[in-house]
Length: 116
Length: 114
Image (cartoon, rainbow over all chains, first blue to last red; front, side):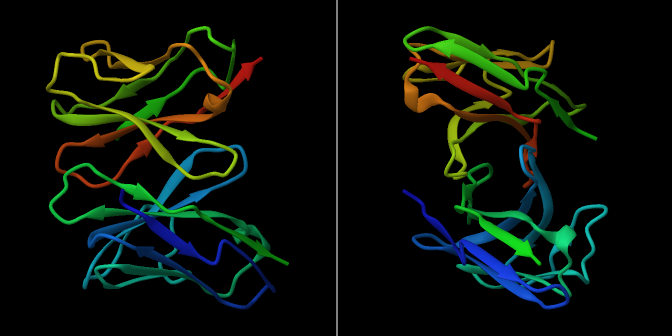
């Protein structure tokens, strides 16, 4: 089956620093990747959609200068949280859609970010 | 804007019994997909079942089946012969046809009592 990995699975960083989270599709090419944020005991909220080779499309209310998304290849997308603050602490989940699919979406295992 | 509503924050069921999770959605589109995802304590999202809106027949996957009522914009999930491993958060999700993103409901936490 299609596998999506995320790295790291858990990261702690200090306030004001930047942290990068990687999302990789291991056995398929992902023309589109999605980044979600999930607060404790809440649902997933889509942050942005990224297509390989083009700029990400951010959802309303998501600061694009704070959450930098790069989709440089068909198997890798990165989310960089810049100048992190404690309120950015959350669970970040990526998903990837294979090329040619109209509905399939495979999720990564998530990354827990804690900003101290 | 499309919205998905799950009105049951928590549900519980005895092992081997049947449970139904509710979901309603709001859209002006005629073609779309509906999904149920399971999120166990590991937090890995797992697709449980998918329904295409143009199909009248309700989708089934082993012990999981849906009751899709397009006119009522309702999409419930029935789990038969509940097992301890079914305990998880269940999210209903909507995706317009041809669009890319998923819109999730608030989730229902399902507990299985042995």
